[in-house]
Image 1 (cartoon, rainbow over the protein chains, first blue to last red):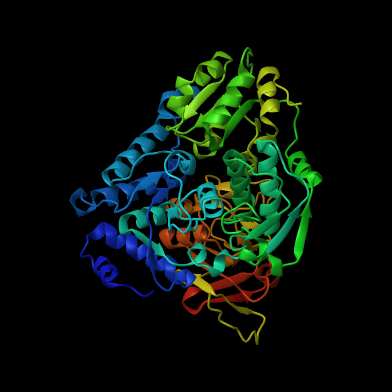
Image 2: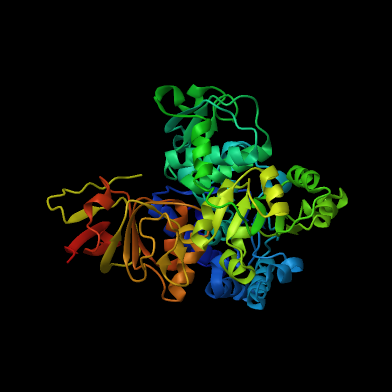
Length: 411
Length: 147
């Protein structure tokens, strides 16, 4: 990679050991992808739940925080993805003390490195939405695909070590979705049906993600009616990224880089696939394997205030016989409390949790400790993930999930 | 992305566009399926745990995984190193198509990786073959056919 004077100085250790380690890691990744140089970034977002880090990852973070006599600091606004717990609800979740100890050690290390513990995977709704053309180093695939596609910003998937490195150096290797050429459409998809529910939007994203197939494939989608809202695009993008490892999509006439189909080269592509309601339903049917459920989870991505409002309205006057978890960000939770949504949901027997995400919170151990296997959710992303954790997940509408919490059965 | 071309004079040797890590050799676990450490693995038991995965139930420990594409979330960037710290880790990973997360994870966890071949690598390496991953030369070699 071509380095400028500042980067050569960092690499030589003149800016401290922490920045040097970060840049060395970034050069390895840049060389792997053939990056010509670095691009400055304005924000970094770090996925770092302790189930992923494990003790070795936490110890590495602590070493970084201790290095340079504890003076190593991020250079740009650097924030965090959900943590592995909501400390106030850890007993209810039956999380073990060692999990909480790892979480506290991680938080301490991040704080010492100057990282802001926002603990959210919906920062584009709650912290600061990126702008078109803004170069970022974001972790969490749902955050990246939303920022790239809906906001027109530019980020690759940055795993925790790389996002932290970007925070510490203020730059990232220039490859992938930082480049104009990579952002052109590679697969053209015609949709004949426009979803109205979040689970359907997620399922449609999952269908397209599977068809796209890999990280470098960029779908351009035609045929959607109207202007879908932020929560719809949140579920759509998160599922597409989850099922397909996709990081960017275009919606012809809707998303900022595809005002016209030809803006992203879509007019030069044949229509590769036509997707209808039956395809979306088929994906959901594949996850409808049980009538009875053990737990209902609304999470992945964290819930917006509007989703919590809807859950509260649906919960009013009910009595849940199964655990129902509604998980949001620390930024939304105070408003959820203030609007009375938390009180309504918890009066029905549900729980509103904050700062975590279900699958990032020792999902396997929670299943074993609580006897949870059959899980109902309206998140297509969540059902895609949880099979590997031993769950039998069902994808259903928000209304069906609330009903299931009350009856123990999914309609 | 620059492309290195292989003469393919022998069907036993393949050239990758992307490479990182040390040279290793071992038994290949081959499937035309994706890979995500979070989605697909029981990282405690060391097996593929996603029921729908084509390698479901098989141990990945010490094996060279030859798979189609990197999938899923960003957790794998941490998880490869965590798995290596416990010795419950693949020896190397070979992809038709990689994503940044698995490449970043390989860089962070010192796991050898090759990606990007002319042709489908999962169709060219027999399941159970002994192979060598040689990142310095961007090369995958079949050393011995499966029993």
